[in-house]
Image (cartoon, rainbow, N blue to C red; front, side, top):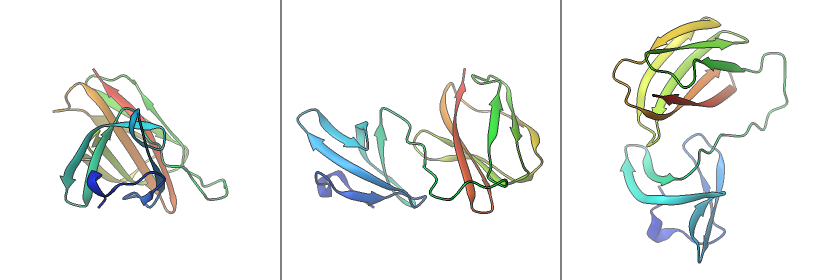
Length: 143
């Protein structure tokens, strides 16, 4: 939990997913990696959210293998539903809004699934899929 009042220039912070991000504070504002903080200190159950003007996609530090998860979302932008096609079966799928709130969670999906977007408002979402140690995240736009 890193509140804005405790941030310092060059500080390294570990995210919920275990990735490390760098704080930069200068005359142009506060940045997390290269994304500018637009709203600070939204407290959540598992930490604090700082809204930024870009999407930070987790990097992988593992060596690529044949079992590494990759997937496509279509249509994207979407309105009523999306289809997920992955190269392997999926242990879990999570769709979060930009504030990090979980909106949909599904488990043990085949390599091709249809997911309804009932109740989703127009905006940007993050779709994260996991299989074993392999995690992949992509942006989803809902019209």
